[in-house]
Image (cartoon, rainbow, N blue to C red; front, side):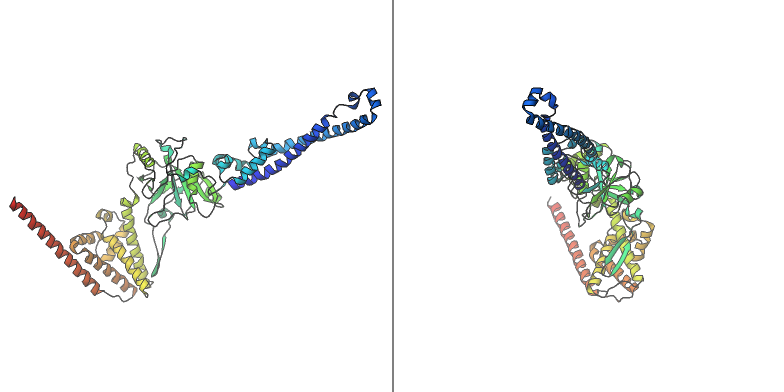
Length: 498
């Protein structure tokens, strides 16, 4: 936006400056001819004409030139006025009537301007200006930026009350544009996760049936995840999602069940060139194009400087500004939302982790059935065993309530791994609590052997490793029994003394 505006205004002002320079020249000549406007016979009496004939003739010539200049001047001013009116369609109206000194000063301002604010504009006025000039509205990073985006303690925006639900907007960064006026979950998109490992390439169904957003901020990079390369940002006023099934109102990880509908009050920031296709796919959605490789940072600028919300930088678990977080949660509680759990602490996360483990193990087994496992190098064998171990551990330490809520397909897959239901297997794990490490290792190696046998690759049972783990487990169990015995003896002695 800023670059286009600067180019339009600079071209127009330079043209306007030429007219102003010419106008100054005409005014100087006009002052000169002003002295010869009076007809010669009125200016000179009969006697004076006889006595000063040469002076009279010179005046007479300049008077004729003055009449010609006046006629030309009238025509020039007519063109000058038309030109000025033409510029009204391309410049802010007050600029049209500036004199040369003001134009030159503003040209210098244009040269140094780095944000729309430097030109005394905001997003709405800039957008209206470009639309009037029949130019595309395309954002660039930094042009909406203000100092507020770099402060942790934010100056409260007077346009909104901090105790109002309307002072909050949800931000979703993603690799995918909206479809059918919705932010669709991975499941609803039908997208499958592509996974590339040294021993096998495979794909699995997405585990997450939820949509995650951040409140008045872009999401922060955390837990080895990064949103720096995302191409799209969707902004939704909080008032538009209150009727959705909100699972957690956490300001850094706002969680909604299923896909999220969008309407004319919502915005999508997209790469330049994609705006028309997105508008066609999502009628009514406000689509704003930007220049650049990703949308990172631009959504923060847009919500603050274009839409007037207060920007609150989000960390991993909530707002960096504790006062802002307390205010936000108070507002949400007033509207009946009391769960602010981070996603990592929710039942949904436990279900996702369990589903992922089952689906990964099922995909590995499918690869084995097709004899696609590559286990010839040490790296491949190590990666394979590490993945199987992780999946087996995740399944066998799962909460029973989570297991009971698994879809039938995943229940059946888990049963095929262990020869009995996952629920029964977990109860078996509880029974082996004193030798848990050995028991888990035994289950892991059992699954490893099963998959390798399916794949047609010989396996090392690793009896020595099992024996060492079993021995250590027995020692730990013996130590635990001894500690319990000593504790009992001390308690008995204490009671006898009393």
